[in-house]
Length: 79
Image (cartoon, rainbow, N blue to C red; front, top):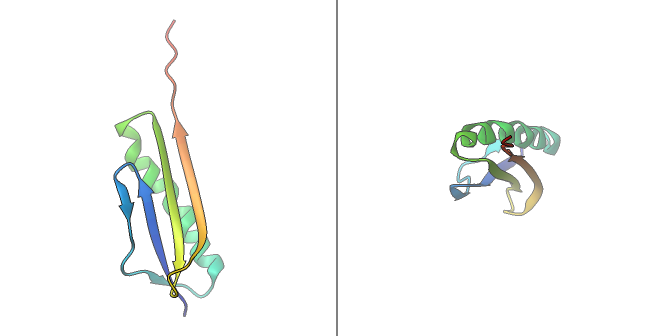
């Protein structure tokens, strides 16, 4: 099975995946990246009103083959 790595950029910096996971297809790896993004963002929300989380999927050749990005912006309106 092909090996895929999930590198994350968030408010804490860049986190390179040294281990990776095996998936039957690229589509399964892409779906995993899409599932990771909201979970990471949810953990960061208490720390502020603006966040961007990026997940790069690399293949076994160390080439980025997919990038997912999610953002949140909160705005407080006062009367």
